[in-house]
Length: 408
Image (cartoon, rainbow, N blue to C red; front, side, top):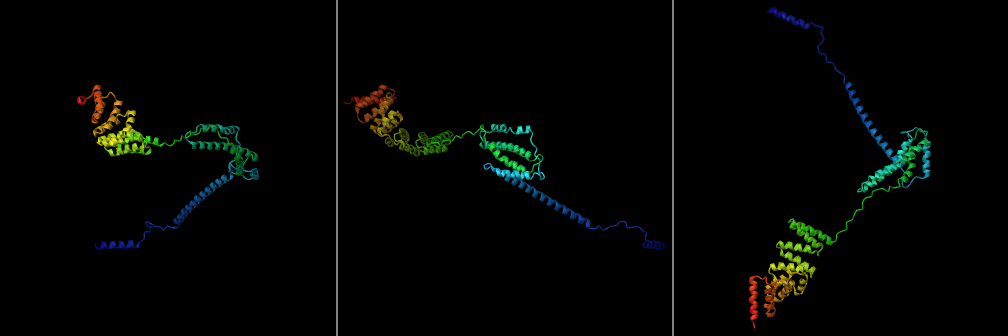
């Protein structure tokens, strides 16, 4: 064992002392940092250059557009104030002086005869445009007129530009010469635009609706109220009837409908108020007195009925054939023993309906109450002669007639 240990120790010492001459397996080298810095600087320079280029291009474009608009505005003459001949000659001289200058822009090429013929057909285009104008748009008519004027102006401008280009230079023309040619053609284009086509379709005149009279407005409200009433919308009907009367108080139909609506709702006070206003407006109209009497009779207010129906109006009621008016008055008077007024009403009824026995019977009853035996006997006899009475009424008439005839 000791020999083996000594051998191993000697081998270890030999390995430590000997160099086999082999290079290291991995060799790490240190790369310099300047290539990366150069790359970053190059990228930054490119970005800055690109931004400057874009900004300069935008500014040049804006300047060119401003220059073109300024040139167009300055070169366009006023239609109402055409340029003087001296100004035109000066511009022609300036354009002649610039003939030798290098040409800028596009060279003008003279139009052929066929192109000129097509351009001279502007009037046909105008007719086509005006034939398609819409009747209902007045603004479209102005727009079409403007388009036609622009077309005629552009045609004449192109002709004059070509002529001036041929006279000045056969090969090239500068922008100044083009502007002078345009300035020359502006007066002629304005003159060409003066004639107006005669086939313009004008808009139909607007029919102005005259304001409605109070009576017409009241009729509209009345119609609305009747429709609302038919649909069962009574509140709306009431509002419409009230508005109809407020607009035109003489609307009798609206007053009747409003009073009937109140009466149907058991609002007799409002109904009487509406009808009494009708009497104030038209005292000679018996319809309001008759309608008020119907409400008052229902409430047993017979004295007020007689106040509404004086004897002086019985003849008018007879002339108008108002049987209900006379019956209401006669019945109310007989109920409260006002025989004189009852006789006035029933006498009119016997004239209006002479073959109705009950009016003769009522007239005999009231004559009998006044102790006028002669007229009472005459009335009872006439009633029995006509006939048609109920058994009770006929029995009463016979009994009273017998009693009156037996009296000395």
